[in-house]
Length: 191
Image 1 (cartoon, rainbow, N blue to C red):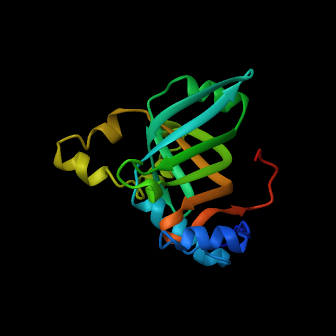
Image 2: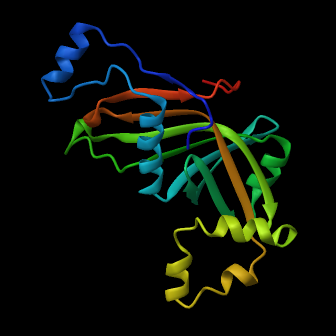
């Protein structure tokens, strides 16, 4: 967290929009510091564990549902393999989303989600066991695997580890006042 020196972009709202949202007890934020925004995003990442990762190779996009864990804004994924690795080798630019279940019939304003663009790198556990051991410390499921008698999986499987460093993050949570507020490191990524 911090150190990335991102630029915060809070979309403007006119008085008519603000008044319309106020009718539903929604107060859109006007400003937020980088540190505050990063804290909100990290808390969101910390309280979720499934993302949809989009990769692309030869103009053929691929979206994969994966479990993740994070340290600050950096996201880690362990996977045995799949087509996403060929895509990452050809093109390290990725995007992913994390979201809450959305039930508009129950709560129209309840949609909440995070969209991230960034750069991914990967390595195999056996090629860099020290780095794997360091990253494994951030895994939220290691203790659960141990309780289920599966702790040997970390030793037996030569996992691929994907590391995603964000370049741009957009967060939507109208109930908390976030209307597509973004953090942009300034790297060239698609909008």
